[in-house]
Structure formats: structure tokens, C-alpha cells
Image (tube, rainbow, N blue to C red; front, top):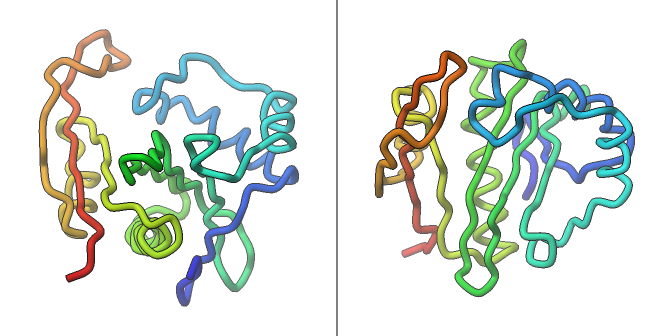
Length: 175
């Protein structure tokens, strides 16, 4: 269930600390999160060693996206703000730059939706997209996510301006 013909989503391992170091310290991606400073390998190693993989206890689930044939990590997918009570979560997907534009984000999204519905029994998924990031908007809208709101001037940009954040959701119920 956590694999396609090309990709495999697997649990976080302590050996992933160096890979996470590269991902978490991509300053270009910080604008999409609340990260404001680099993370050390020690912090990430400790995180990997103490990681709680129960999304309902931890409130999040982090999976490493790998190429199925080579086991090469190509990105990370997170379910966060996971709520067992409300049966919902938000999704975050990061694909490493040299693996972008190969359809990996779409495949990852399909896999994580299937897992969220069939294993976690979630009712709904959401995603937060920076206003104007059309690749992100297209990715989620093509998978049936519907725009539910726009928070104006919500995210600060590196040049000191503010942009909106769009919230998309998708019901996972099968008819």
C-alpha cells in the first residue's frame, strides 16, 4: 500500500539523519514552514532516534520517499496536525530538487491519500499552499482538492513582503 511501480514510502530510520539534514536545511523551503535557522545533524539524529511513528499520539507522521528500484531517497512526506477525533490531517510534500518534474509528488500524494484513508481511516486531508505557487495548486486540484479559503498576507517572503496562503481540502470517503 505504501508503494507504487516507482516509489516506496517508508518509515524514518536513524540513518536518515544526513538526508534530513539536507532537506531541513534547504533555506529556499523555509518560507513554507516556520523554520528560521539551520538544524544540526545531532538534532536530526536525536529526532530520528526518538521518533514516534504513531500519528495519533505524535500528531504527525513522517515518511521517506524512495525510488523503489534503488532505495535512493527523493523526498519526504508528512502528515501533520493529525486528529484522530476529527479524522483529518494536513499534508506536506518535499521532493529534492534533482528529482522534481518526474511525477514523484503526484505519486506520493496518491500513496499517502490511500494510506490515510485505508489505514488511518481519515475522513479528510488538507494542504496549505502559498498564494501564487501554481505548481502546488495544480498538483492538489488535479487530485480533487478544493479551495476552501485564502488567508491574506499570511506568509512572509524573503524580501520582507507578505503573501496569502490558500487552504485546500479533499474528502477521502469512497462512494
